[in-house]
Structure formats: C-alpha cells, structure tokens
Image (cartoon, rainbow, N blue to C red; front, side):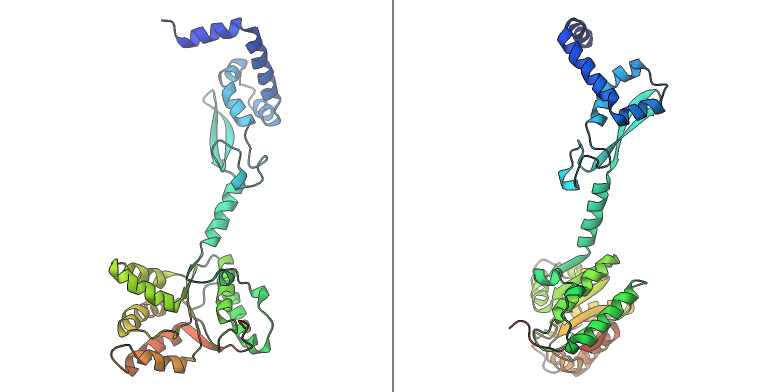
Length: 309
C-alpha cells in the first residue's frame, strides 16, 4: 500500500481548483507584514522551507501577536488563551513557540492584587472602601491622619504597629479598615479582615474538623491582620488564651501590625476579656492579652454621627 502522503500529493497536483486556493492562501500569508518581516530577516529560508512549514506560518499569521487583535485577556483569540506566538527559525526549520501576552500578565497582576485582601464575613461595601471616600469630619480627623501616616510609612516598609479604633456604632471604624487594606494592596501587602463574632464561631466549627491550628497559622502570618468588633462577644478562656493570645504573641514577636475596631476603649476591653464564660474573673490573663494588643497597635478614638441610621 502506497503511503497516504504520496496519494495526497498526487491528488493535489491533479486538482487545479485546490492548487489555486492553496497558492492564493500562500500569497496572502507571505504578504502578512510580520511574516514578510520574518522572511526578510532570514534570507536563508528557501521556498522549500516555506512550503514545508506553511501551516506554521498560517498559524502565526492568524493569531493575535502580543494582543494586537485582542481587547483583553478574557477575549483572547489565540489557540492557547493568554499566550502570544513567536516565529522562529532554528536549525533550518520554521518553528512557533509561545509566551505570555501582555494582557495575560496584566490579568495575573490584577488577580494577584485582588487576592491580597482576604476577608471573613465582611460586607462588600467594606471590601470596596477607599480613603478618598472617607467623609471629612473633625470627629474622625485624628483617625484619618493616623491611617494616612501608617500608609505613608508602609511605602518604605510595613510598620510594626497597627491602630486600635475605638468609638460608638456607625462612625466608620470598619470602613477605615477596608480603606487601609485597599491602600496596602497597592504596596503588595496582604491583609486579612475578620469580623470577630463570626471568627469565634468559625474556630468552634474548626475544632470538629481538627483544623484549628491551620486557621490560627493563617491569621498569624498575614502581613496585616484586622480584627473587627473585638469585644462584641464574650470569649471563652480557651479562645482568649490559646487562639487570640497565640495569634497576638506571634505577631508581637514577628513585629507584624494588627488593626482593631471596638466599641470599647482598651481599658474597657481589658475588663471584658477578664470575664470568661466559665472561670469568672481572670484579670492577670486579660492583662497579658491587652499588653500584646498594645504592642501591636495604637489606640485612636473615632467619633461622629452614626451613619447607619
């Protein structure tokens, strides 16, 4: 049985219509500006080489080269999404390799930035917060100044202390956390925002799956940890000492900042932490937790109207 390629070649030679279409396509491919540039750059390429690898030239000519035919990564037209073809002449052969296109690189950078903020039970409004949208109010002026000061220092390196925002309901403490986290993302610092009451419940659930230590390690190691509404729920002695205490101890030793919001001052919070759910008043252990909080944050009062009304 004769090889199929020999039979196909004979069929092509005997089929005038096919030959005409083939020559027309070849002419169109060779007139492509990038193909013409490539061939001029490699005068050693023969007609035989071109015919042998015309399919490669066609593959290159019909794709988007570094996004010249694509509006975005999502609308990439290429065979391999997000990869741009490179035409090469190596060892007497025409080849195509692929590299990440600019849209792909930009998409990865954008995705990486978005992933720098992780949250547990935080509303979308907070995750989209911006320093530019903070309402100018003399009652929040000091808090805003301290936030800006922290961010300015972060341009050179992450400060050792975060901020402890204390004040009544609805004055924008949590919004400040979101705005700071979004600014830190610009400097490639990761932030983890946690709503404390739900965090407590999540840790309780993690006990059943033996994943408590995994979660604790995650909170320990984020560049910036933000604990929203601390003091809103009475903590068990175990959570206070083994979970919260462990996280704060690690961050204190590693000089990693922590941000807090609370309706209580630090002094008031110490009294709350001293009252565990089972063991009554434990002033010494609460004092130890507060010392760690003071080591990783600075207390700032936030005032103003309740904007939730």
